[in-house]
Amino acid sequence: MMQTKVLFSSLFALVGLTFNAVAEPKPAQVLDLWPETAPGEKGDIGEEYLRPPKAGDRKPVHRYTNVTEPTLSFYPAPSDSNTGATVIVCPGGGYSILAWDLEGIEVCEWLNSIGVNGVLLKYRVPRRKDRPKHDAPLQDVQRAFGLVRQKAKAWKLDANRIGVLGFSAGGHLSATASTNYSERVYKRIDAADDLPCRPDFTVLVYPAYLVDNATKTKLEPEFTIDKNTPPAFLVHAGNDRIPAEGSIQYYLALRKAGVEAELHIHPLGGHGFGLRKTEFPIHKWPHRCGEWMKSIGLLDK
Image 1 (cartoon, rainbow, N blue to C red):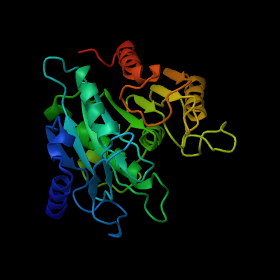
Image 2 (cartoon, rainbow, N blue to C red):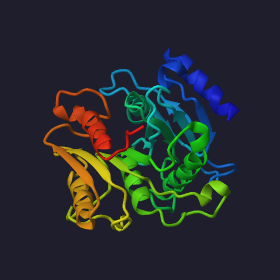
Image 3 (cartoon, rainbow, N blue to C red):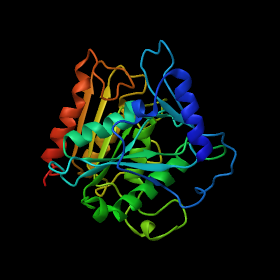
Image 4 (cartoon, rainbow, N blue to C red):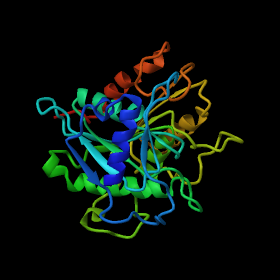
């Protein structure tokens, strides 16, 4: 880890940035997800690094890649407005990188503004050879739920109001976690793995890989939705290169199972906007999401 920190410092010095410019607000605590090597790791991934935006980038984003040591970064809501509700945030990036500020830190800032604690998950990317694209990340997010519930008392969280929010590939990961929670996909490590890994609610923002691209009418086989699937809020743009049919089919499956859900399909907005303001109304989705969270009792103190 020390070599990684030195690499980060050199990288930021080279481009005239500082780590604080990316990491503000700073997390109150950062936890290693696994006490030792993460399950299935072979040591064949390069050194982790955080790539800053390139000059002239249309959308400035800091991107993590080569993540082999997953972490949780805890961003508590202000004490005077803290509702006890918590969201584990899964940035997107095609299971290749993590859009760390755009779909991570900035999201935790917004959650804190509505009294919700943010837990930013740095899950393993890129895709591991000879493993399904979401295999290692699903292990990470399941482990994250156990650790966060284990920390509920110390962090002053409501263990029964812990949800997941994901963008693009992180949306796929969040949906997978929300439909695959009956058992862990790794061997028990410690007492944290005895706690539930089911999200209490789900927020999917332009989620990827939900339907097959040929028909766009069937959810992929990793999703099994029934009456116990967590309630969900979904938002997608109709002109997204990732088909909005994925969000629509997930919503319809929830409805069929009798699960509360809210879906917003905007005609314009594209992909990868995060919470940043755009010329289209879709950028107002956080306000709608906050209203949804309030309407189902998630923001009650």
